[in-house]
Length: 60
Image: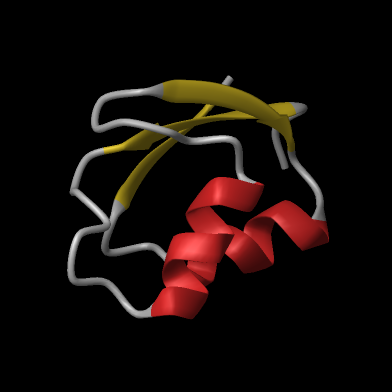
């Protein structure tokens, strides 16, 4: 596992399930193409798994 993950929102949350919107917000993503760096741990991996159709993930 990498030390950090670079997470980018690539699709809008308009029309998404409310639980997915909250997950995106919890990851710190606000607008399309906004990128955040998060630690690579089980909690973050679980959030990414839930919204994998909305985000792009890179290991850094």
